[in-house]
Length: 215
Image 1 (cartoon, rainbow, N blue to C red):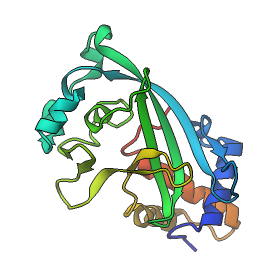
Image 2 (image 1 turned 135 degrees about the horizontal axis):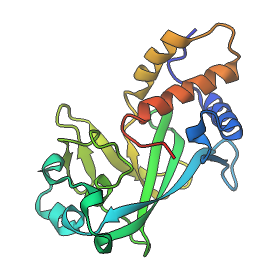
Image 3 (image 1 turned 90 degrees about the vertical axis):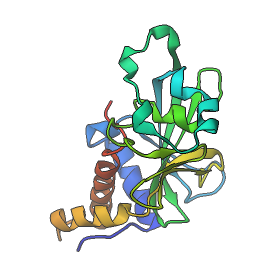
């Protein structure tokens, strides 16, 4: 029977199994982290180093002056920007259990090589996101708004385990989409752990429509 979502224990077991087996291959750089003090608050973690253009939309002043600008109008191909205008960015990705939404969620933080956090306009220019994913959305200082609804695609919030400031992809529709995928592939012979692993693999497939998860 297809699982609409996972419980917290199912999430933990599935993520630990994925981290151990590294299957599919795009999960090989993810690792399972436990809370240093309290059990049952673990999460998946991955670190990336990406180029981030230092000029244009990346300037915070541009965000402040145009809080509802059209991101599509200001996108620029990062490959065409001279090397001297590119800074290295460390992106920390997390797959966590959201206590607010009761589903897995993708959180991340992004910092320049000098430790300064990226603002939202800079984040939207990262190659972390697929080219089409943010096209036409409204970018403000603290959220990325879907023009077709009142929902924020990207919002700010504290990491559920670490308590550190992060950005996260709004997860409210994720379970329904993953549930539809699972309904098509569900196998009655799966164990509870196998079903949880398949659920998380489907979840990564959904997130990969927006985030580049390939090596």
